[in-house]
Image 1 (cartoon, rainbow, N blue to C red):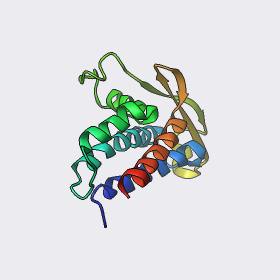
Image 2 (image 1 turned 90 degrees about the vertical axis):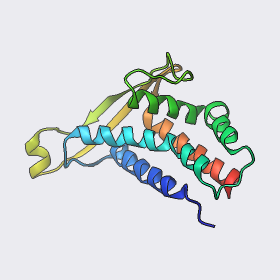
Image 3 (image 1 turned 180 degrees about the vertical axis):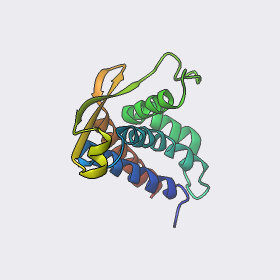
Image 4 (image 1 turned 45 degrees about the horizontal axis):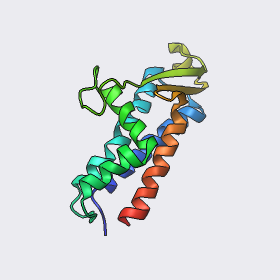
Length: 162
């Protein structure tokens, strides 16, 4: 059976691959702000996969909304962090009660490669950008959190949906 949420899951995988390329190193062909946008987009799309699963009428889970929300916000620390990151990126001031007072800042921790216009237009170099997230548990590597989020969704999909 083809599930409707799979469209979003495939999108999350593509955003994750972009993030991986940024983390591991890729040709520097555009301004670094685009890479930052790709990282932000990963977390926003990853978190909102939950909404696609909840809204997908082909997914047959008892008490689906409650079950998915519990997995994301209570059972799984990484997806809960993903939600905090997502809402910190989307809103100047988090408004939902579960996010009030919790703002996660995403920042570049390491940038290797040039960022001049001439460099990325004429002879692209390889750049690597590492991101850190300031969480309630301290500074954490953003790509590490992203990888754990992917594994968490894979586990949920395999064990709860398929």
